[in-house]
Image (cartoon, rainbow, N blue to C red; front, side, top):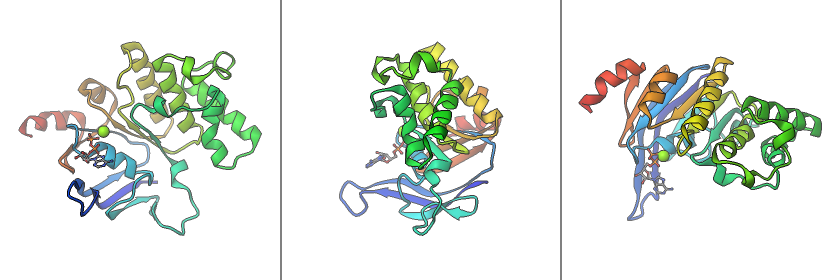
Amino acid sequence: MALVIENLCHIYNAGEPFEAVALKDVNLRIEEGEFVALIGHTGSGKSTLAQHLNGLIKPTSGRVLFDDKDINQKDSKENFRFKIGLVFQYPEYQLFDESVKKDIAFGPKNMGLDENEIDLRVKKAMATVGLNYEEFSEKSPFELSGGQMRRVALAGVLAMEPSVLVLDEPSAGLDPRAKEFLLQDIKHLNEQGKTIIMISHNMDDVARFAKRVLVMKKGKIVLDGTPSEVFQNIEEL
Ligand code: ADP
Ligand code: MG
């Protein structure tokens, strides 16, 4: 189940005086089980690319295919948002429910799963991110530390059991301990077979965790290789 991007272009506010060309003819193929890091300066198009991967924003032109199917095909019965999970930058700002448990259950509920299955998935997702069910399930997400909130947000995406996980700067703003905890979780998910696409500005994290690095510049992918290959060539940019 590869994720394929073909000739992807995205222009915000096309035709307006303040239009922004965010992606310019991006082509990419990511195989199942890869751990890919996406790096580049602010404004290079990383978040725009991430948000195309699960159909949250639509291409101006070009296609995104998962398992050979166009994820933006109108008549598709499959919901690709459940298969390709997107964890936003600062996802804790999107927590909203009165309890941790209900917040994590939101995605699985939208999938139309029955109560038992939802409960199972909430428990499993909490265990995966290291949140004790007895201790945290009834707590308000807003009583938690930053690192715990981040883990609740990740659990909410994991509870949909996506096969691809796209994370936009997952460790930004966390203290070193919470950051390490989260990165180890992500690594573990990859070892269990999930495809990981992680935006990061931390080169140490990229070198430690990713097996492939993509560098974006002004809406294009300008380097694509192993961490050592990319770091050797990055000076030239
Ligand atoms: P990155 O995540 O690498 O910092 P973004 O994808 O956020 O880059 O931004 C790429 C370009 O698109 C930038 O020029 C940015 O200003 C512009 N952009 C991003 N989001 C929006 C938006 N919602 N509306 C208009 N322009 C945007
Ligand atoms: Mg961004």
